[in-house]
Image 1: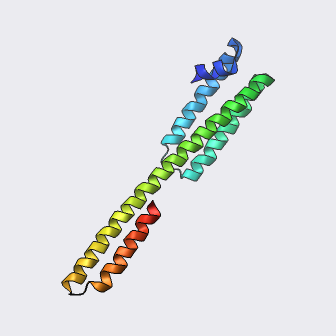
Image 2: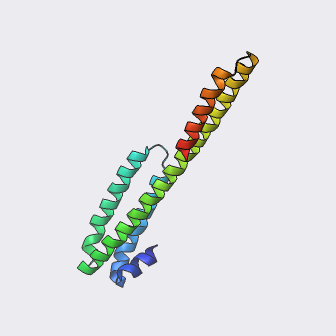
Image 3: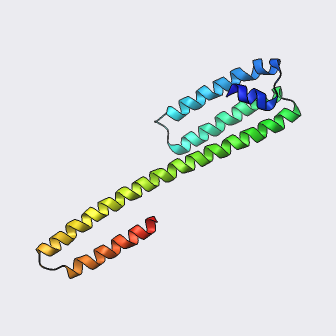
Length: 141
């Protein structure tokens, strides 16, 4: 990561000596933040922004104007990838929860139909149950 960063920005040896330790420190902090299960997703995003802003403040004075522009482009691309990854993970979690909810509903409807059959009346139970299942399944598609 540090090597890609230094190549992408065209850092001099002196800049590498100053910037690479800052980058390594940021990566450690990001790793710790990712592993911290005590924080809500919103708090993690807030701390992620604070870490990024702090790193930007430390590194920008060490870069020339051309490198600063390249750095901004790299930062924007990294943020975009991070947002896409987080959105994908959130969508996966929502899909899993919806699938579990659908399975639970199917089981509950099935139990209701069985009870209705045992009681000798299926008309009142089957239609609404099937309708509810079709509606939920279509919403998940």
